[in-house]
Image 1 (spheres, rainbow, N blue to C red):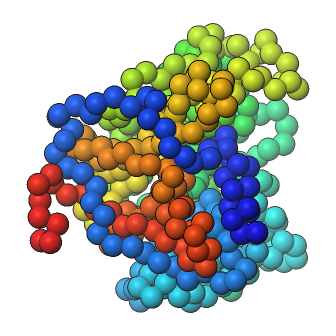
Image 2: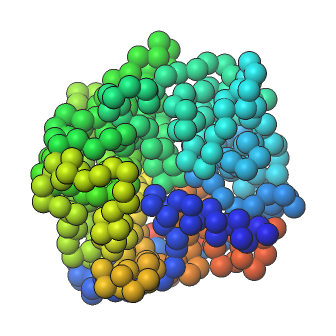
Length: 401
């Protein structure tokens, strides 16, 4: 039953985190200039699931408790935040999330996300109903923030935090990447990065969608969802957009923006669904556009950005989709790669992965390395959540050193 639910979970978020399987259709030979480093598997992180817990989450992160790193897992099924010991993999605590009442956070659903900042400080964003909650280690609400508004016709930015685009805290503020509620003919000035002042609840928007989004219609909503990483040592935030080969660096102290090309060697072109940015106004919103769906599932994109402060390296995740002809034949299988680049925005490597084994929607950072969920091993044993741990190594480096 847990296996069926895992597949159902993947199918249910196929538009935002599509079903994960192999694909080599768009692969081209990597350029030699990017062959300096590769991700090397060093170990496995094994979490001991209980008999009722199945793998299906939009949010995994780590936090420190008395200097020890723990894993925090948002279980949408049971409305529970589960913490694991990162060394033993055993469950340390289960924090219940009430739906109603004085500590009610609503039905969180699969698209909600959390940020476990400390043992008694947890931020929970209910994406279905829009509030952001600060709760303690007992699940009690300490404070509620309004970060978006779904009522009315105004196209408010929607925080799209997830495992691959986590929330961040900087200078007593919470940073969250933002997607869209509705399509517009012109996205000039549309916010893509939200800063919430945790003291007074004031919201500022630090940057906007790039010009590319106002020049064409890109189709599915997830093509508009950015990912954000924070380099707190340099007071810089870096943003990756799904349809843009560039990444954008914003200085949090003065607002200056720089952009750098960090492209995948496996993505040749990212084409819009329609060149006309106002195309959406001509279609019937009540009818499913199968051509748009085919475009979404046959157009590769960038899906995550993580900064590894332990090793001063960035990881940009690229989803590599099959050709249009394959999708029309019913083959929606895809693969992914992880691009590594340094703080000087020099691409130093790109490592391809097969999604018959690894799940690109479940990648997060630990002090030991980059953790990537082993879907294949979970399907063999549902009582274990197993992640391969990777670190970037120079090609030719002795793995024993």
